Image (cartoon, rainbow, N blue to C red; front, top):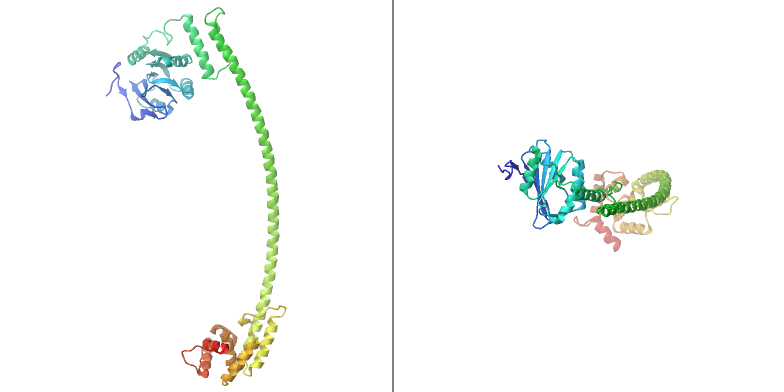
Amino acid sequence: MERCSVSHLPVTRLPEWSVRHGSAGYVKEISVIGNDIIHSRVVADVPVVLDYMDNDLIHSVIDSPVLRGSPIHWIWNLQDVDGMSWGYKKDITNLLYRWSPSLRLIVFYNLRPSFRTMMETAASVVPAQIEVIFADSFKDAVESTLAFKSGTLPQASFWGTSKDEGHARLQEFLCAVAKMTWFNMLDQVVPFPAADSPYYPFLRSIACMQDDLRSRAAEHQAEMADLRRSYEQRLDRKKHHMKAQMELHRQALQGFEEERSRLLLQLCSQEQKLESVSRSVAEKRAALAAIARKVMALEDDAGRGAGIAATCRSLFSSGSSAPIADAQAGIRFAERDRAFITLLEKIHPSLTPRELQTLLLMKHNTTNRELSGMMGVSARGVESLRYRIHKKRGIGRHRSIKSYLLELSEG
């Protein structure tokens, strides 16, 4: 086990007690000496500026079983530190005034001359129950800590054992600066020495600076109040405008809904009318289909059938000038159809009027199923009728009736 070279107490190091600050260029390392001394150091190739305090790392060390809940003593090696950011200063104040562990002693050692004044400023605002010591080396820091723990350390702060006016005024000066800049405390009373004291100008300048900062803070607050009022007024105008827009949108939506309801009612009415018309058409088609079947059942000359078919056409087209396109709704014989039937009678005088009408329907691409419905016979009856027609025509068995009728109509 590693032991401290000065106190010979065991030293605890854990991998998670090391944090790299890549952007700032340093590594923060913490170890524990014994069970109540925390040792922190900053490792860097060149002097660095501390960017932020590793609060998670500190809590990880404090919550470890190595520290047994006894008062804590903290040693900081600041050899590679040349400054600290504003955020780090705020973290230090939070550490000193809001931290729950019982911190009794802070020892800074290996301070660079350019950084010492800043740390003295920090030490000037440390709570009275925490002692601050500045040491030259690690050995001095550990020995001072052990002496403090044993109660043999002389009652001296980082100002030294001397209590002359110079040290007291310096502490007052640094404390006033720290409170104004770090804590934004602009109302604390700055103690003044006598007017003929050599330290009077320094502390008086701090008081003047404090007055100026208070004036600037008041001016800033007034500007912020003006901005807040201005933005609140703009926000109120925007709210009124949005409410007006929302009301317009609501009215438009209400209008759209009313129009939609009106169109739906109109659509329902039109659908009812269409359904009524469809029923009427269906009834006429049924009547026409029945008449068409009777026409096909006639065995007399095709002229009489054409006349009855014309009657069917006039029945179906009553109230409308549109021709009948559905074969199941009726059969119409135009002039060219009559000429075609006449031609068939000349070529095939043995065909009956029923067979002539069947050929005419086949010429108009009527299917066997449609023929079955129009003639009132089964599908087999239609096939038998087609067979008789095919045989009476005297054409080859591989030649279709449809192709024969097309050739006949084109010829």
